[in-house]
Length: 422
Image (cartoon, rainbow, N blue to C red):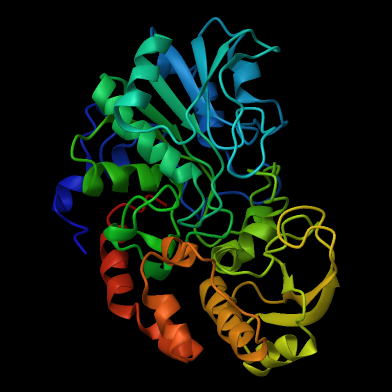
């Protein structure tokens, strides 16, 4: 793993705008320390809130395009595109939609395509699964000079919006465009990085570069990391940070409204478990898609109470497992009643989502004879290598699997630390 090929220069990450470099100089840097931030609803101000309060100074005189989705909202749940479009201080000329689309109408693995937004008349371009020169060509054809990124992340390496950010950074550099990244909270805190680190041989749209499975960073921090460590041609980058956010906070402590970032991420509770239980996408078990509790409900035909019993016997911190039965309305086992477990996180401070996900894989394989990995070894893309799959197949327990990434995670944490801004 090579995470530090540009070393401490990464703090600048190729940023050319004065005030966008370093911890104290980032555009929109938080001025209030955690100790001075007042409490209560509305305490956290997002990057967009601060950009707008500053009169859109960073966008002055530029033709602007926005990469966003339904999560790009103000504190009173107006969409930022609808707010900026009629504002004479911003020359907004284009919108770029990620997976699920700008207005969020597409399911997993889909997008909305190219269309004109009925509400604003703005052209909407599809970025999903586009990268490199093809995406750069879209930016060029749109006529934008500055690209703004504002999307709520879920905190997991395989959640694709951070790789949309990465691809947009790469393409903006190729097209000679400036990128402004507006920050939002990591909904599951930014306290620590957890889980295995991607091996570049397994790079895909659910993981382009070697970061941890639960990265513990915000999108502006990730943008600085990408620019400083991974992009061979850094982009002209500015970041607009939040004010009032503390790394220890879960989303419901921010006072901000939650909008599902994707159809199967309905609540912050989903995000809490997602970086571990999304691993079940790599198996023949349902990960709860098609239920009201995706990634909290897991199961398959033929599973009975023994799985919940085995998982509870591990006495994992912060979580209990309930024997559960459900019938997904779509995706795996559509219309069939399956058995499995529901996760109930009772102490989120001590809960480790990645360890829990591994423990559930181990116990599912031991208690259900029908357990199988997806034939395409999707689990290797999700975990970032063959390690997790081969260890579990060899009979390894949870501690052995988790211990297998200790050194790579320590190396990533050392690099990550240089880019933390809160």
